[in-house]
Length: 114
Image (cartoon, rainbow, N blue to C red; front, side, top):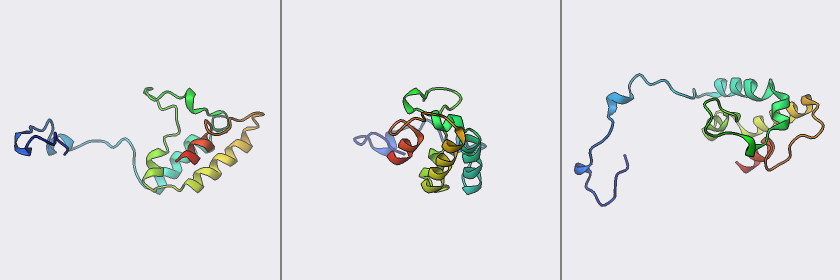
């Protein structure tokens, strides 16, 4: 655990211990199967959402995520950016939205930024 660099480790009192971490329910379940299910739920089944997604309009402090929630799966390698890219492309085509959002605020732009 990090602690102030000028303080010896013996003088630092931890605020939690190993017993505090038992029986925790993970917020995100890992693995490709979970990632693909999350992709389907949040992109494939919501083509209009994908086509009209705009990053500045999302709320990072909301109790219900206003983003795709795919970041943990992408960052840990459970799903490839190529798989997400083609899911986005397919959803945009299925949405029939006349003017989909454009990069950098669109989902495509957010994925390219990654």
